[in-house]
Every structure is written in C-alpha cells, then in structure tokens.
Image (cartoon, rainbow, N blue to C red):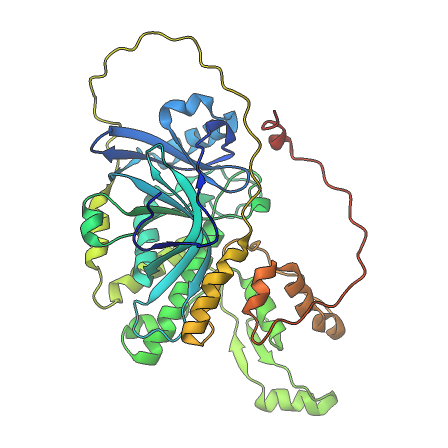
Length: 444
C-alpha cells in the first residue's frame, strides 16, 4: 500500500489487508459513481461493518446486502432525488476520522489540522489495505470539503429520537499536491466516525460533524481576533453543537448557570461569598445550540472571508467531483456465459478493533515540538451530556468520574506527569444485555 503524500502511517501499526465483504456491511453511508480511466463508469456503495471499518462494494452486489441496508439505499435515493455524484479519479482512499487535533501556536488563519483515523485503499484494486495514521490538511480544506459535499449527504429515515433528518456527511479531502489531484491521484473520501453505541438504526454523523466544524470555526475566529482580519466573522457569536454539554463544562469550571447566564462562583462561604459573586463574579452568556446545517452555513461564510480562498487545491478538487447524470454511460460489454449461482462461503469473524492509544504517539510528538497544548476534537465520545449533580459535594467528585470513564490514552492530555489511578473496590459486573435483534442476522 502506497498512501497519499499527506498521510503519515503509524510506525508501529502494520497495514492489514482490507477484505471488502458485502455480507459484513451493517449500515450504508454513501453512494457514488467512479469515473476511472481504466474502468469506465462504475457505481459503488460505501458502508461500515460492526467495528466501524469502511467497506466499499460495487453496486451490482446490492442484492447481496442485508435487507436493512437495501432499505437505507432505497430511502436515500428517493428522499434525496439526486443520482449518485460522479468522482473523476484514478483511485480513491477512504478515511474514517476518529480524532482531530488543532495545533497550538500556529501562525496565520488557514492553519494545519491533524486528522487521526484509519485509511483504507487504494480502491478499486486488489491491494487495498487498512492502516491507522495522521492526515494533514488545512482549516479551509476541512470547512470547504464538508460544505461542498453536503448536498450529497446520505439521508436516513427519521426515527423517534431524531430532531432533524438524520444524515451521513462525507468530505472529499486532498491527500497530495494539486498536480497529483489533477491526475486523479491522492483523493481521500473521509467519513467522521460514529460511536458503535449510537448506531442503532443508522450511522448518521451529524453531531460529530457539527462538533468538528465548531472547533475549527472557533479556532479560526480566535486567531482572526488576535491577528486581525475577517472582521465580520470575528465579531459573530458562534453557537454550540450541544447546549447541555456547554452548560456541563461551565459547571465543571466553577460557574453557576441561571437561564442564559453563567456566573463564576466565589470560594467564600455565606453572605460574603454571595456579595463577592454579585460584585466581582465573572459572567458569561451560555451560547445557543445549533444543528449541523447551521454550522455548514457558518463554514461557508467563513470561507468567503478567508484570505486567499479558494486555493489551487480547492479549485482542483471541485473539478474532480460533479453532480450525477442519472446513470452511467452505456458501454458495450460482451455477453458472458451463464454460470451457476455463486455460493457465498461463511463469513469469517470480525477482527477486534485496533486500540486507539496509537494516536498518542502523534500527539506526544507534536507537544514536544511546540510545547503548547493543542485542542482536540473527539468524534468517538458519545454525544450526550453528563448527568448534572444537585449537591456541591457530588459536583466535586464528578471530574474524576469523567476522567475514569475516558479511554486510557486520553489521560495523557492532562498537564504534568500522569498520576497513578487510585485503587478502587471492583463493583459487581452487571449481567450482559442481550444482543439487539438486528445483530443476530449477522451470526453464522
């Protein structure tokens, strides 16, 4: 496997062969037509398996997919009323975004952004493999990729828990220089990963995309205010993807939230403390919550004000993707002799997911180079607010509980040397819950 120029594989994680098994797909996330010079026009379906790996299968194998996936594809085609878009490329790479690092102390506005996840490709081809690593792009690349690809987002049927239409967003990102992109090489289709526990009836990633765009916009706005430029965008008030999470974060920082105002609490007890809060307590406004569509609009307005945009890379990417035309161009294919029905062998068990501690190697290297702490966007964290405690003693103990519930590699973000965890009595384990009915369809 020869990855794109701007993708750095993790040195200690060897590439694994990528087996594109249609029977292993659990959710559809995308559909497109690839215009490859040596293949002609072929339509492909992109999905994920039970552990989150990206799978790509030809549309001619649609009948072998599970009935639930065929229903997702049919709903998307009817609801979107758009034929699959056409991507002009020699080969494609597919990237599952699991974590985003926003480097600190970077000069300028269109600064680099580090995307961490698993790369699969090149596709089509017999040598497709999977390897974790880091993809380096710019803030403008991220904002433009999601806004450019938003009209072709995968649409799912609305369920009882959905406020808006659930969508699966993707982003066509640059993995190489403009000259290579113009030849159809180094193109990366990225899909923000969704935690497995949130994939009950679909794999919509709207909350993850909103969180990613919010963090990129917030860093861009902070630099615009510090260094000057983009005055209209710098003066705007950014919403948040989740108001409940924003309130919980303010409370952990010692604020007391009343309505739309959060006030810093005083450490003094009694009436003196209340008076100090009233006179000197810092007050901040709790931002409003916005859906993913509004963050896409904010991203578009930020790009219009970004100096030097669009870049040559962005102009090249726009030329490699275009709306669908209703179907592939007809090709003369010689008739093949009839063959007996293909017998599908039993599916091999899925390998366990890769450990996520490999990302810390990249984060540690960047911290050593710059010294300052970067901002990290975690896409694999469940998108729900922590429970709020009513009494003060319980609120003080909420921070350690949050730290202990995070994966081991996240503890390395804390400043200073890691502190050994305090031994605790092991609580009795709850009886494992039964499998959801849809998982039983994948058992051999």
